[in-house]
Image (cartoon, rainbow, N blue to C red):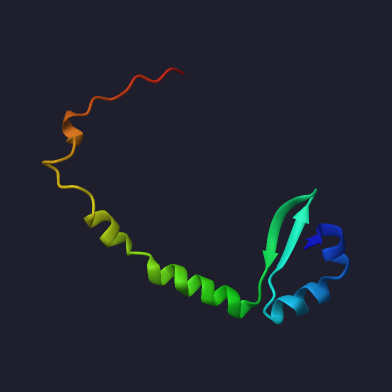
Length: 82
């Protein structure tokens, strides 16, 4: 784990360790801020996330049928105070 100032000072080391397959955690003001990953690790995480996610069309089709849900036509608008 690196604090931000040390990570900036030793950025080459941070990158080298990330390329070696060891994600580098960087804190800012004592709180977790970012993780530096190799491009290969990032691509693998992104591919896994996309593989487990349904398409937007599938998401829309999963909504309940109109007859089982509250119809938009019967929904009354709500009062909004400005």
